[in-house]
Amino acid sequence: MSKTQDKHQSGTLSLKRDPERSMTASTSGSAIPASGVSASEPDAVPIAQNVETAKADSMVHGAKTVKSDKKDTLKEELGSLGKLLSLIFVPEIKDGKEKVALFTQKLQAALQQVKTADDLTQAVVDACTRSIPISDPDFSKLLQVLLLTQDIDATVRHKILGFCVEAVSANWIESHRGNTNLFIDVAGDIDLNNPGLLALLTRAITERYKKRIDILKQSLKDEARERHEFRSLSPVQLQGQCENLITIAYLWAVETGKCSSEKAINQFEKRLAINVSEFNADKRACFFLAEQMRDTKSGIAETISFFQRQIKEIKDKSHFYEGSRDALQRDVTTLSQQNQELQSHVVSLQCQINELKQQLDKEKMIAHEQQLDEQAERVHLRDDVGKAKAKAYNLLREEVVMPLELSLKALQREVPKVANAEHQIELVLESIEREIEWFKK
Image (tube, rainbow, N blue to C red; front, top):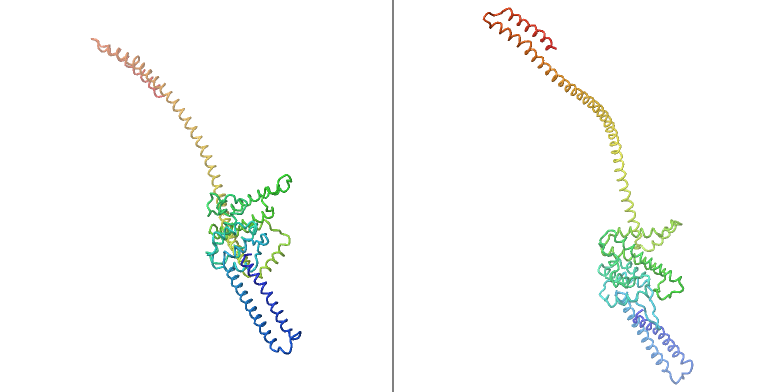
């Protein structure tokens, strides 16, 4: 709570006391005649009454003025983003102790109506950021600030988002890194527009918090280790801080265009499904919806509408895929029949191929045998030719040439011996006729 509020509160208390004083004075003044005013002083009572009445009027008018000033100042503070955030996050020092202000309905309503962020200076951001470990150790208020300002001016909303990201970056378990945006640091080298950004942030942040919580739990069991070696947050608070930090990461990604709202919703659905209990779930859902009816702007109608649209889209896709599946099944059946026919045809062709191979082998064998026969025949022919040549040579040499030479010599004598020549010619003819039969074979 700010010093201005202290002044206002002190002013309010004084206003409550002053009218009592005026009433006491008025009462005492009116009692004077009954207690001791003499008849010789007739004007004393009216004069006293007029004076007290004037004092009372003055006090009442003053009270109205102070109350009006307080209202105007409070309205100015509630309309200023910087002062609102200071009221929410910067503790007020009372009696030497830091007292965190309650996040009242009035402050929440004021956040939803904020119009400008001109006074959200770096000094205010630094003061709020330093106070987060005391005023908002689990980041629940920061998350609520983001949720309450979802419908305000986009420029103001972006500045609030920047403040929240800087605040969590300076106060999460690895704040020693000194980054003003831990989400960019955790994402590392991955493209911030990568479809798997939210899954990566969820896994990385969860693993780091789990490691820290495990160490903290072990330290709480280990009596020999000093408690001050670890931060003051309990494992439950660290787990809550982790969950709220991941949720802020999703809202940051959606608000800065790193991912679509649909992807963030699907990621929220996965996270919610982890802790869902099936026991008495329908009844709890019924009571939850009944509770949402008190606030028409809770977003539950939009959420239900979103999932109904998704279900309808899934059903439409399912019908489409079922039709595609049926068409594919028909195609598969047709192709299966064609495949069977082709397989039968292949079998038939294979049989024909086998028959042709057998016939080819047979023809090859016949051709080979013919080739061998021809070779043998050529060998025999060569032998016969040799014999024929020898036979003809012997015939001509011995059976023809010699008798003809004798016949020629007998005819060339001075006295030709015709009879001898005829006889030799006859022998030649007989030899030729005899050998001709052999050549005919």
